[in-house]
Length: 426
Image (cartoon, rainbow, N blue to C red):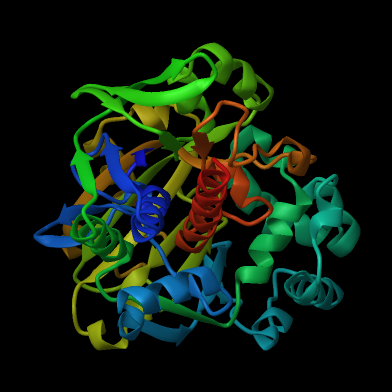
């Protein structure tokens, strides 16, 4: 049985790996010149680094099992996470409950509400009941207007813009639940996971066709029989898409389009992510939220602060800026994006100067984050479709969890099981 996988990100590579191990013949088509998708790599002043920042949590068992299977577990460096928020030009640590209790921008009673809400979110046994609520309504009831306006509104607006008030409480609570005290950085980055998976796929006899774009799903009646690509037509008994729904809809036709139409309301937001190599860190924290209105970005992630062996080396810092693909920021030239960020770093660290910058790379992705509106649990597509032989691993299937390498592996494992179960019944 021959399978064609559309998309060579972590999900596509994982599906391919599982199907090859089960004895199927597999080919991946990936439009980029490097595997990994959002877990791909860029060259940053001579260093190969992840295009976007990635980290791993203790509870992410799907990824940890995969890392063990691939022999990557000893590359995980576990550290206690450090977080802070900048308000009024001052940086306040919020890594521990005691930090929260000392968070002077809030009254003491509001600090207690803030801390209790985070603890409650981390320990809820089930968050599906929050699916019908907006995060804004849930938070205002849980912590009050002051905490919501000081902490949560800036974070939601920085990520979702004018859709911030429409985001599901289940998604936010799931995100809180994963923000544990200990997290890990993988030496070599998530892109090393992608390249390792691609190498295993090839070793098992699979093909990874890079720089090849899928342009159509070939159907005969109600069956998927192949994929049309920029490199020609590929025949298949099974087709698996790992594309975001808008992109999949753009290449679907016939009965497949009819099946996908109910999911056409699934929305995504884009990202402009800037990776900067600095001589030294602008902050001692791994994650710094910048909630001051005069700073053009909402956060700085210093990945090097997770790796104790790299403390005397240049720091790899990420500045993600989420926006719609028709926003001025998304259209802005790379030099302009970098210049504005670098110009604002002095507002975070008064000692900063431009000569700290050793290099910078800007990456733009149209589909960086699914917009999780209330009721999304009722609108998530299944892996298996009514079109015979066509399956999908789509990001909305992460929900209520957030996008991550772990959840890419999780839905890929689930999709591969669906393919193999269907094949066993043929």
